[in-house]
Image 1: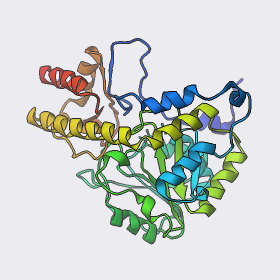
Image 2: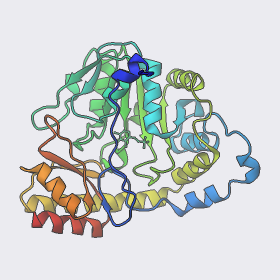
Image 3: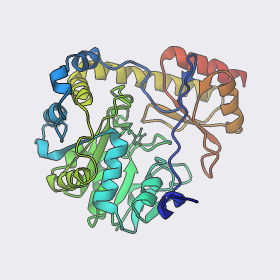
Image 4: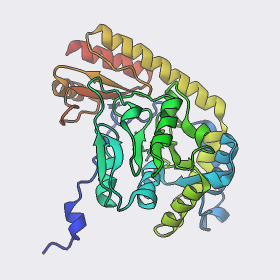
Length: 347
Ligand SMILES: *Cc1c(COP(=O)(O)O)cnc(C)c1O
């Protein structure tokens, strides 16, 4: 007897990168930050009292929502907090796209976008990246919504602010969701500055990458208060307390330690640009990256993936059309990148 619902039977879940249990791996497969979070984060988490832990947390993110509002110079009604940006985006699908058709998304982007579409009965229209893997804003017009990542993943290309503005203008009938998981490495401006101008624009961000907090599970959305209210409604129909006391305190401390975040992201950008040059010098084409990973073309990408794996270096490889000639490699520390380059040169 199969007890699963028809939908559960039909679903094709997202497959996350491997998290090895034993030590000794150089982990370049899930775009985590190689540096620890700000010391202020562990301090703030340690100071959460047992009196607080015995109570339910604030339903909207409490100190975190306040800190984010201050950081972006917006009212708290523009901010929605969730248990990782994956959860925030899933709630966006429920609030804005459920049951819709012609929601535009790139054919090559974050692998979770089509999974949520299946879960929430959304018909996506896939817009192919150009032959050079660039994403062209003018290709997205008249959708009942748009979902894309800027910078895009796994390609690492980025749209400029005027291009994002075009998206909001040319798709007035739906929400334009811009997933800015990698914006802090991008060298292009965030779309947050357009939020008060376009009521259909929603920016989603995460603490997982540029704040070294993938393990804390915190993401957020910034948008017009009417959109934020829609997200709250869907959240409160599912889980009133997505963020625990520790996550609220830790993420608030992270957003306030601007100096630490500046220093670590500067270091990653520098390591990224050096690694790009070194891989190109070895003969591998690398698309110029605006993120904390590289999209590296290799004639035998699968062979290279397996060679790295044998040497305890994890990268990401997809045996799929348009992706199978590439590896996605996260930027680690300089020492980790040195080991990567050595290993690649031996291949
Ligand atoms: C990593 C990533 C996410 C998920 O981030 P979490 O906050 O850890 O859930 C979302 N979108 C993109 C494009 C990502 O790469």
